[in-house]
Length: 113
Length: 113
Image (cartoon, each protein chain N blue to C red):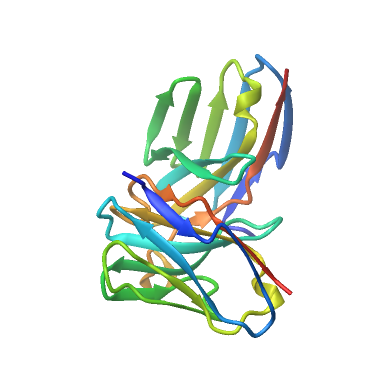
């Protein structure tokens, strides 16, 4: 079982819709990251969370440490939001002491005009 | 700042050839890492470095070598390329592994025939 699970795998929405992407993880973590990968391949960091909620423009990220769950919301979605959204966690205890992020497989979002 | 740069953008190799993927950052980040991204899988850590002269293995290190002689540069060497190493390779850097914003390079697409 993957340590980080994202749902849905694929999501198609109409412009203007409210979008929610979910991330569940099975290990204790010190931080959770949301990343965006554009169709051209570039990866951009959106948020880094350790508790609560963060907002940047139309993007909102929340995390519930007790439930080991995070959500990424996009309000008033737009075709330019079409991308793969990736959740990654920083485990509290990493095997062998390695400093690493563990990544989900990503959610592919398509927003149609 | 140029951020994180990677060269080449695309490379075709024959089985058994060796090559070096270049990665450089100008943000004075101590932590640098190499990931590979394959279809249907999340980003997987190959090697990482927490500072000049210090490197360690990630999740999938076999067939790859790294060195970190300066803070800025973190090259990834393929010793004897195999078709299983066909992938997209991303270099990333940050001030603190996992606890700070991760900055990614644009990626190198590698095809091994």
